[in-house]
Image (cartoon, rainbow, N blue to C red; front, side):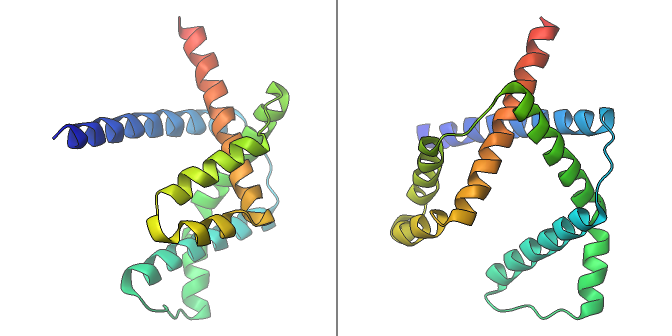
Length: 161
């Protein structure tokens, strides 16, 4: 019973943090219009479609075949989300740069251990995968974005007080 209560409390906390992050990112993007290279937005839209496709394939347990027209339509539908994500990412990278925020290798290693520790038997294989240079780069970028968001939220909390 205590574990269930802890899980519920943890989920509520994550939901609140997710809402705060979303509101912050919306305000950040709205307050800082940035011209974006269309290729970046198209690439992000393609990644969103690939991610959704991978999730569906994992759920149904088989490959999903889509025509070029279907893929193009999905990417077009993902354009707005992709544009927002690219804008937010660029702005958070600039916040991190101006604030002097960095991610150390030890932080990446700790994140890999945390992720791999949650999968049981496949931990070794997942750890190997996550230690590839491109995956470590993705983890570094995500952790840096998290630090930039925390930095902005902290500054917002200080100015409210």
